[in-house]
Image (cartoon, rainbow, N blue to C red; front, side, top):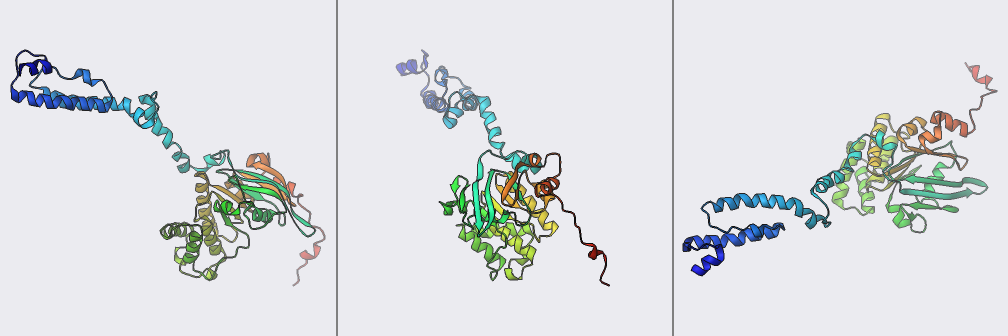
Length: 368
């Protein structure tokens, strides 16, 4: 017993047997906590028995554990040993930063697309019908997170261009890359990244609105539960909850456009290609749709739309291309294209200017 007392505690007076057992149990406990925390607490293990030792050990153990976790946690979790405690505090701030642009106003994000990567790259697109050249060497570069507008007079080739971009019409020449995928050599993969609202859309109008959304979502590989949840969200956003159980054939022109847009968005594509999306849509619904599209673009989605409404394009788009007679006459940011003019004035100049209406004097003599 004397040998044990001298070896364990370095004390000549032999302690009582009852006091030796708690001490022998405590000592491994302190060493285990120090080893788990990765510190040098082993050298500070108690050498003399004290009546207050259990309290001191309980009070000291949380303090040692807290102090060592701040230093050791980066080495265990983040791998680099050089990372100090301040870097550990800064890391969550960096991780939370991307969520702020999505919640901020779109006016701030419109001028700065979320990435410099091209989601849509069109090079030398060409299409002719008989003797008519509809698209003559169109090239476009649409960045990720961009809200891109395409404008032009009737017959300028806008719809033909968008039909070739989305795989609805085969080009005679040129290349279309959607998120780096060739839309014509690998159309299945390319179309997974696209949501399309085509011109002169044809829907399965003998289905109800809910059935059409279910069909569109299932066709894109979504589960039935996901389709139900997203259908409810889209119907609420577009204000067509009461029409979901009616046949699409009974919808008005504006409601048909909205259900078609919902079907194009249900699979959350990287790229939305919309041909005249606001035609026949009332102003209130159009404002709701614009807000949805702006949030989508702010979150990293990309929108390409054609429209005759110059004011709309100037308000919501960050980039624009003016197409006249199948050729791109101007492309870039809104400010680059319009210069010192309004977008409408710039468009009219490029399209050939206003023509004076002469020889219409008969219109001033009324038939009655």
